[in-house]
Image 1: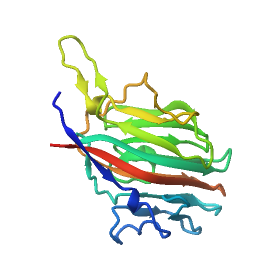
Image 2 (image 1 turned 90 degrees about the horizontal axis):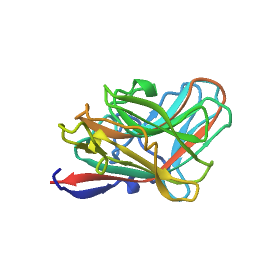
Image 3 (image 1 turned 180 degrees about the vertical axis):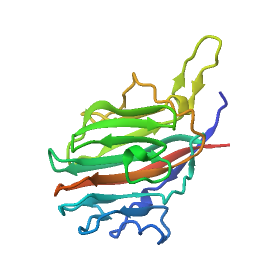
Image 4 (image 1 turned 90 degrees about the vertical axis):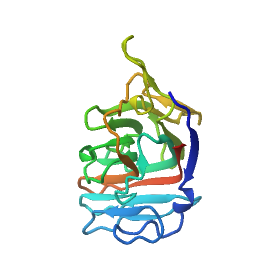
Length: 240
């Protein structure tokens, strides 16, 4: 495998400001845009104490999506990615159908499972346990439990590693690295960054296009509320 230097893109400074990102089609110097599907309600993305953006649904009884992405500018070539990491905190009404995702994705789709390519952390139905998923259009790993809970209002570090994983194959075939064995890590109960779902092979080798950062909170109906706060986003890319 060839060696590459790494460059780090720090998106932390963009995730500041009380107003959050602009609506899609209204760029204002940030690489991110807001996604808001509400009709009667008023979900928000606002600056959070200590930095970052807080994506918050309100208690209007309707289907709602609130979040942000990079307006389908798939700027991160999966073959150049080395890692992506960020800090996140969440808060959701217990026992309700509030779901959240954060990580990397292809083109936007309102339905999580309809995003053609994804590589992200997921919280389902207000369960505090984190799940991870990947889909490269061929290999689809859904809802793999990390076994690690995320306490409400507590920031944890999340990291997706495209550089160090190795997929060993039959003796006559060369081992594969990088996107063929994507590694997920997150803070454990003691605050240590630890690998999760290590017994699952997260193989994204069938995708060779770009990805964008993607964070979203949604509910199908009801008055539930939920907040996902993202800050300190960094992306490592190969430097040729």
